[in-house]
Image (cartoon, rainbow, N blue to C red; front, side, top):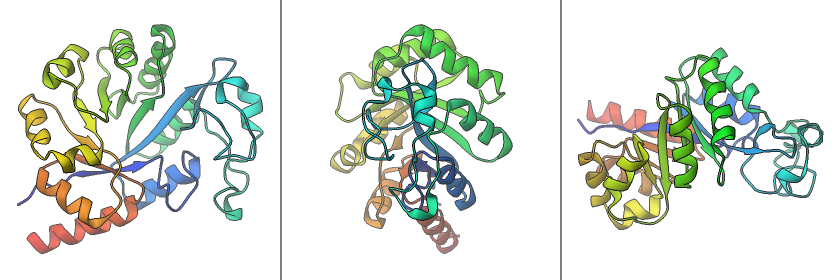
Length: 250
């Protein structure tokens, strides 16, 4: 039987609820996603908030850079109405709220991306929060930035780490070993253009969690390539599609 990949909800179930909000995370959990993926950044006062873009313009009723506002200022913004009036009043979550959500909803893990470069001290704040919440075995921290991945490893060697890539770095297995990651996560475009990439990473003992695939043709190709997880904006549809595929092949 073909190995079926885990379903990872990109910024929550972001096609049916506003991305990176508690409503999107709740929707992902109800859809049966194995993991939720989301992004964290630092506010002006050093508080850790869940938001993808460098600015608040696209996903709130505010404007300006995330790092230019304090947590209190960010929390006053409406992070849901841009998506639908039904989600008016959603707020930018804190890392603490996200971790509490996971504690209260067993069965779904977290793939947590740190945007940009984080200092060792700030990275340690992330990992210590994860450990204190008792979630070290349910969270993978990741970044595109090797400096951030290394800072996370120095802060908490026992917390699993991943490296996000959007182009081939050589020698890729050696670089992953130097970073101490357990998963290397390429774009869907990379895998579709080079299906041998998955095998290279698997032979190096690495998992492969691909971002971001939202249509059946991509899912078919990624399953055939043997990826370990698919990060998608449509976890509800992917869960159903995989269930149907499993039933058909059983």
